[in-house]
Image 1 (spheres, rainbow, N blue to C red):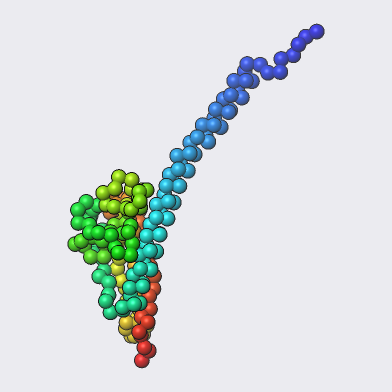
Image 2: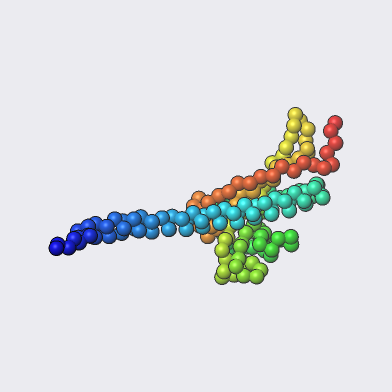
Length: 180
């Protein structure tokens, strides 16, 4: 009686080739997925920092409308780097550091350590934040409100043109405004 072999060598080699192509195709997707995850995390850091800053500025504006906010210098200025010129953290926020010479410019740091600092080695996210205002006026009524604008650019180590950018804004209406 003749014995039948279920598979021959050629069929096994073809099956292994198909499996190798499938596994290789799946492995190619891992770097793409990890890059997308990293980009999403950076966008989340930027949005959180902008939200934190917008609401802190809104609070300052509502409690004392006439103090004003100094607008940012030109955001495309590449002389603003992560090197020297940064002051201490804002009192209300320990992750946002104000630039000592450029008005309306901040550095945002997210750190795996306990308290973020400018010299930390465990920085996950570092960006430059530019803050400026635009007036809200309705048919000649002045001082009705302002729009707080923020541009967050990251990673801060790159030149301005090479960074990713996020734009955020919040309208704040003057609580002391009385219609004529």
